[in-house]
Length: 167
Image (cartoon, rainbow, N blue to C red):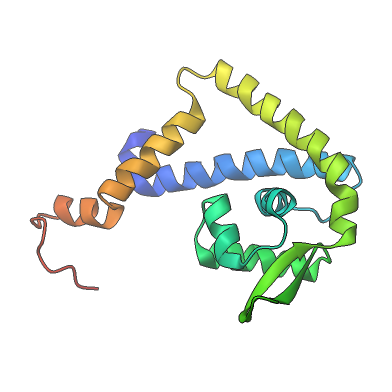
């Protein structure tokens, strides 16, 4: 049996493994830099807040390109780790704004150097590949936005587009 015989389960498993390998390497660099506990998933949120200043979770999600739920979870972890504070928006008391703490702001020079090096390392990695991984990921996300995986699977199960998609 070849890898392709395993279908999407193997694809998902391999993608998770790739992400684990990439994130594990970056997390090891954080540890080397003395940033114990800083997680790779924090980076886009910290960068967004550093660039924009205080922002709602929805604004963070949009800036980072993730779901509101994913951004909310990451912000909650950042709050727990003392890197982000949440405060009521003075212009709209119904909203809470996330902002970097002084501790997070003190880390920005080290993080900026790491971000620059990681970006270059990713460029070097992609140069070794026959097709840029970042381009492939973007194209896959665009294809799935046009026709979600659920639709694709249901079609492969013999259903016509537009048929009821039950549970």
